[in-house]
View: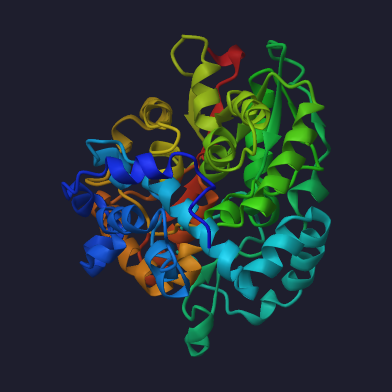
Length: 445
């Protein structure tokens, strides 16, 4: 195996680490397992030792690099700003080159996620069998985890299927995907001021196939604000799960496809309601995938146009007081979970809170700690038991708020929060921000 080449700055990043140990205080994995081999300092030291001659970077060490959430909490406290996420993905990429991907990843990544039509057919087929999974009993109140989706019942995998994640609570695959249910062009509502703004919507896989009502709600809000929304149905997966697993070649194909689709739309901005997708479009493609400077510039130009929905809703306030209101039951008490891919990758922290504080006032309560929920994409699949341990701390903070609803803008975090809130029988519901709010019409100002 040749020296690590995928990320040019691997050597510089690994050798920047001064072994201070601050990463130990921030790492969710270390908090549970207290094993320094699985924390940034330990991996940085390993990479420094093998970067020129790393025959030891083989199958036996896969666990060292897979057992990382890529949450960037270590980077946030690192005095040197070491990009541990870059180092981990570089190492994973080299392991993929040497050993390949396991079948449970290579098949979905290269044959399904990379082909939207096939993915739609596969999930449509799978949806016909989900009735076999028991339905989780919903709380007896007016708020549900999927509030606008009338058939959106949470299902769970029976405990006797422990090897498949027994006990896991899952949102269903929608009977009709978002692309099947809506047109591509969505003009502004007729009786509002047209902002002459054309926005392209990047939905992401979870919204497309499990939370289509979230996509519809997002488009509806923007239309009510006088924004034209175009939803290109040829868009595919952002590829974040693929490049996070080290399959950079497949991820690059997926990024180029999406870049080509969106470049034909003449859109002023690209909006997403998925924090994970947003981080891929803004940062991931540029950080991990370019083969040359021209490709890097193309990804950077695209990323500069991307906005999380909370960012865009604040920008559209035009420096006036925000004018949004709740569509949840009166006096609903809410809290907010910071997705790692929004807060630590995109530095979008204040915008969601500005909206929620304006709408809910004293009924908005902060958690005592807003750390990682433990999802981490495929981390949740490969290390499910550890993922649940990390989630338990988050769930304890949720319970302490005594909120009715946890607001979020990341479908991945939503799935993790729903799973663990149901596991511990808490009354809180998990709701995407766009399903909780709406603009106040100009006529009511």
